[in-house]
Amino acid sequence: MKIVSVCGARPNFMKIAALARAFAARLEFEARLVHTGQHYDASMSQSFFDDLALPRPDINLEVGSASHAVQTALIMQRFEPVVQEERPDAVLVVGDVNSTIACGLVAVKLQVPLIHVEAGLRSFDRTMPEEINRLLTDAISDLLFVTEPSGIANLQREGIPAEKMHLVGNVMIDTLLAHRELAARSDMVGRLELTRGEYAVLTLHRPANVDDPATLGRICSALEEIQRTTPVVFPVHPRTRGNLERTGWLARLQQLRGMRLTEPIGYLDFLKLMSEAGVVLTDSGGIQEETTVLGVPCLTLRENTERPITIEQGTNQLVGLDPARILAGFQRARSGQVPRRVPELWDGHAGSRIADIIARWHRERSA
Ligand code: UD1
Image 1 (cartoon, rainbow, N blue to C red):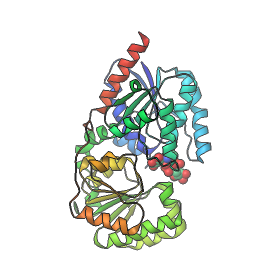
Image 2: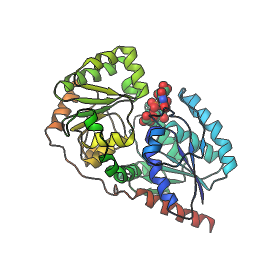
Image 3: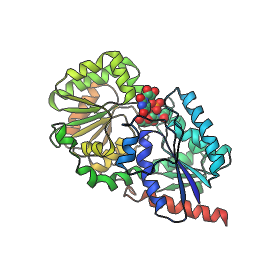
Image 4: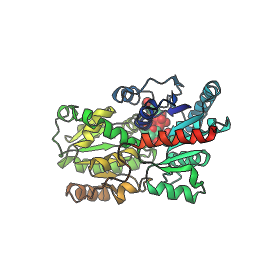
């Protein structure tokens, strides 16, 4: 079975790593990897290929940054001839980035079956570009692999036939568990002169949080408070760096004694930083899942999450963007009263389950 897998942006690489490994372990797969080039900085892309020992992409579409319409269109334009040339039995996309929907659309229009890994997640907030990407990708997929029960309920509500969807667990967690030992050897915590359990890690990149100067300012003022008692490591996403510079916050944060601003950090170093943090503050989706498995308290700086299981079972608290709520959540996280349970099937074997189901599906189709 020939399968073309697509990756494009940072959160795709850890998902694709688990799948590439599962395909490589099974003789029936001939796997091709396409990188769209949505993320292209060494720190946002190549460093993940190195850390995760990912195979070099067979093809790089090198699309780079642009507006949503231009980026999506360019990916489609460059991916179409790849699918025409390769004639795969299926195209596989992961997550919810622009590369996901762009390549998904190309596949189905060429009548190539589409597989979506991390299907069914819903924030119910259609102002998020990712929510649109998720809804549309799921609507056109032939096989949908789901990480948590809420995803199955969402797909059922949207009328997706039951036989297309499979609750299989979380490939991002496969990669985390496979790299924990290697990450433990990173000297990142020492290099930043931090003490285990006594520091916070922050990531911010959502347009809704960082593009509006007033919202960005509210988050930064909460940080001014937190860093008085707890050092905060803040690897800055390129989009966020631009906005911090424009609003004058970059210089202000850099002057604070408790703030450590860095470039984006590679997978293993970041995993080490998260594992030993006292608390993580984030607007990322994947980090809510990773902290749940690591048992590290997480404050999500958003009003909603498409990953409710991280709140119901894991260490996640939704605190929104109001500084008072962020600080109250921070105190609760530091008090050690955060419950922790690892969701069912987040056990390191999701990639294997997916590969087995795809192989069976393909055998039945070609019989
Ligand atoms: C994208 C995804 C988001 C994901 C995030 C992880 C979409 C709609 N969004 O958002 O779901 O959580 O990746 O980071 O697909 N830039 C660089 N170098 C890079 C990449 C980006 O400098 O390697 C800068 C550019 O100025 C670019 C901006 O970051 O315009 C945003 O990049 P883009 O890929 O459009 O979206 P992200 O905000 O990274």
